[in-house]
Structure formats: structure tokens, C-alpha cells
Length: 131
Ligand SMILES: [Zn+2]
Ligand SMILES: [Zn+2]
Image (cartoon, rainbow, N blue to C red; front, side, top):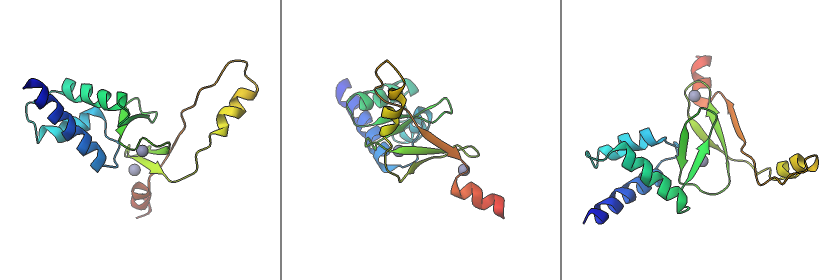
């Protein structure tokens, strides 16, 4: 029975992640899932999030804030992080994969990929400073 409960919690985590565009950290997911499963531990949430990543159902996003953000959108896309409020937002733009080719042209090793993120002030923070 323990296994059934375990995977139900994982489904709740998966559903929450699919329902949000906010790129939550494990802590944020934990706070949400606690309202459904009050006894769940942060460790369980973290394990399940990593399992979803291993299964290819989610990705971990590095945004330079030292936190791991989780995203159910596993397609290649770029992120923007707001220096003011810390919001992580998807950017609608073409993927610049040739950056790896450029980096590799003057490098004798083999480049497999790169992590690019953008930062600045998000639209809602920008609107506030203008007021
Ligand atoms: Zn902001
Ligand atoms: Zn994203």
C-alpha cells in the first residue's frame, strides 16, 4: 500500500507542476502539495521531483539564483529571471544552438551543451517602478 500512496503523491506533484508556469523550487512545490498531503515531507517532494526529472517528465532549470527550479515544459526553451522579485519566466524565442558551435570552434575538447538564461526586470516590476 505504501507504494500506491507514494505514486499518488507523485501524481499530485506532477499535476501541480503541469498546472503552473512559475518554475517552482522544491520548497514552493512542498508548500502546495502540503495542502493536499499534510504529512508529506520536503524530502519526499524532493525525491519525487528528481524522479520526474529522471523520467523525462520535468527539467531542472538553473537561473543563477543558486536554487533548482522545476519545469514541466521539457522542450528546449530559455528563461528570464527577475532580479527584483525572482520570478522565472519562459522566453518566446528561437533556440540559439549554434552557440555551441561558436564556442567549440576555438576549443579542442567536445562541447555537449550550454546553459543560457537572461535576467533583468520583469514586466510587472517594471510597471511598478514607473508608477
Ligand atoms: Zn519582477
Ligand atoms: Zn520554462
